[in-house]
Image (cartoon, helix red, strand yellow):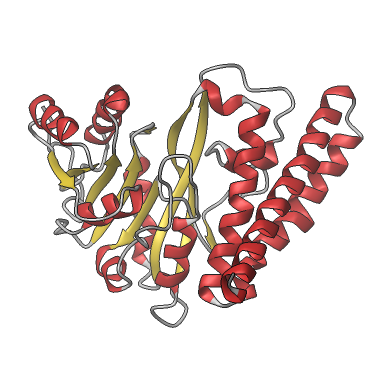
Length: 317
């Protein structure tokens, strides 16, 4: 049973939405919901939006009758549409998002909504702490934590203004989210495809008003489950490729190269500094240096493939 005790002055102001799609992840869904029900700041409502899976809807309604389970079947498959369907039934001024492979620290929600005291803040995001099912590979560079969904080396260590946050640990002003139409359906994560739907949303929401912006809150922490298959070098390269391709698609859709300024700064400062440190750090560090180079090349190949596809689209057969 989900309790409503321990409420403070912000109680009732925020609802939590989680998108899910697979019966195979039932255990993770239940664990994520329990971590939300144990928050020091209790949400007004927990809403689980199930993406095209009626069997999972029935199971969750039976197993957890105290949460709200909705079925998303009205649009293309993917987390973007499911999250939008969840927000459609939200009645609170703030909405927080969490994924079905995450466990929230008890203060995750209370920390996540603190920056909304500033009316210019349209959204916030928290820190991802990776929980590897297998040992973290020795070659894996900390600067590429985003590949597996982990806050990476080079991110702020104090609450800071940022261009974008990640959708698995995010809070928004509900009205602002709805004003831009929510996540872009058909652009995002679905199956093996991964596009930066969170970056796209953050940019569009920040454009709603003068000096509207997002805040990264490292004191708001979730533990993110990293399955064994994500610890392979093959996954690393594929994810870098997908990110490079997705960011070019985002830039072209928005008709502006300035959208990638953060990525350029990341390569120039974070990756360059990390590469220098690894090259000088011995045998194990050299493997990380090689991974940094491979990641940059793979992302570049993904970006190039997006450019080529776009040119073919305009030129025609």
